[in-house]
Image (cartoon, rainbow over all chains, first blue to last red; front, side, top):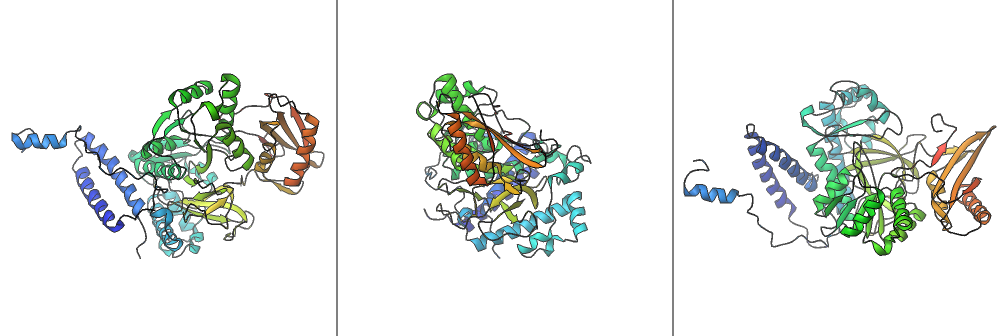
Length: 57
Length: 474
């Protein structure tokens, strides 16, 4: 198998992505096209987090 | 400044143009055998830590958001934070389907008080088939739906689906969950996905031929039925005249019953893979490309326990059948926590050569607790009969088993069909069949042979096992 990507680094970038998407979502209450698409984007970002999650204890 | 002012605005508009796309210079590596190379190969110890953490989190979620779960856990005296190990998971009460039906008559309509999110968050409605009683409604949020199709993407990738595939779904999607998430997962992977919904069987076959579909998903009953229709009604040999090279089966056993798998693979010239899931649970199991004679549990997304059906004791050793109790670790709208699936499974002692660290259930779902029944004091699984019947080339795919009382004695009638144009002597097949069934199931059968085409045909889930000793199975 090829090398594993640097997961910690990727996870940090996903967190940034989530923060930006959440901020945009929070500002989109009067803009349905943004609001609903951001809702989907947030679900996809959450799926990225699930894909990278591991107990780091 | 708004987007409509000055030169900067033009630049901003350009940047925001929906038509500006950047194509990555590094295309995805399609030879990676795992959808998630990280989770699917996680060492067992780390995988189990992840499962425990997720289990605690979903129990806490249900406790805080569902009146049904809170009442259940309070009655059992369980606090989510008390669960410190996977052994302690068993402190959490199990949930059976029969418990979900009455709560769905409560508010909020139509899901009742196991719903953990506001109704506005629910984007998907599905329901169970109601085979075992009143159907159960299943709400999902967009997040849940994303998760469900991710589980399917994991299994399709493991079975070799790649973006160059053209995937045909010969199934009329409806209120049942079947193949919806297979469709979305196929899209997620990047396959060209063809909905073959309302077409009839012959039209579907012709469309598959026209489009040169390379993969499809269907129940084993329908995979066999389609091949039969292609040959008899259209003069098409699926193995030679079609282009399907992989088939994913769901909905009923068959793809891991050796003789049924062999029939399907031979008829289609394709690799046939099994998959297990349920509306209330999700897509929890899959056979990988290595075809290890069993099914992996997607353990990053599910926690699977196997327990003795009689005593309820946990089974940890391989090669011992038990009932699957399963938790979906990331499904939120209507959580599935320690759900009594009624599926009978058996852990394999072997590690799969594919390299996944996920457990393998030997033979996949080998029966249903509801179906495995005692006949003349012997435990009988319908799948064992199917394996014998379909190992006889002189017989068609169809059969029917009727168990009834004659006086005080259990009596089994097995109705089989001669294959079309087999030209074989019915009495010699009958004798061989009796011997083989006696050897495989330890039971005696009355065999009735019927001409080709006289037994019922099924399009989706077949009902071939009838136990007339049970009320309502006639």
